[in-house]
Length: 308
Image (cartoon, rainbow, N blue to C red; front, side, top):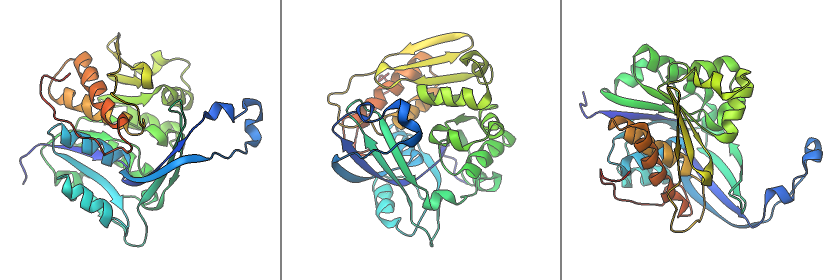
């Protein structure tokens, strides 16, 4: 048995095709015509990068000195990504290879206001990886887990397993919120240590759960973290509201991956036993790094315990 405590990171592994649109989506989309939308965007450049929610979070946790375990599925074209993970000393033990499919691919278009439109080709992500107590026990002892967007059955299976095994976990439904039923979403959230979402996603969650305001949502969870892009983030816990500003990047190249980096930083603070304000400040510091690079796993940083 391995006695080095792990952080379990479930979610997607994907090849990201990042596309830059040198304009604003709002100039091309008319709300009154949204029922028959037909638009075309000419992009300035594209590049294929390593991505996926699980890959991005694990990459940043590794930079923070932790030992993440990726629980995900990939396809027959995994070799390129595999070499990258090995190079960065990220383990492969929790990754399932599905030989008759390709690895999931995300086409991410970003405009000048950092708004994004993503088209996800599911491929392997459409097939259940299988996250259950038998698999989880292979990686004990476990510090904490995060359930990030991935296969729906895996997300629910992970939540049930962690609760059964009394493993602390973070719920991060993200882009999969529209695909989750109200019952599935509530099952994922209730029992989690924290819920992460951005300002758009929190509205989707409340709509799905039929909550009239955020107060009802806060009652379901110990820690609710809502990110607001360049406007920072807000942490709600035990009746308190903690506002966290951004750490300004040296340059703004592409915002893709900032949210995943934020989550990694917050997790690092939690397992260090820091107060929530300091967790949020570290999260903001980590989130600024991918923004400075074209791609979600192109950055490097040296973490010192004094960083916050």
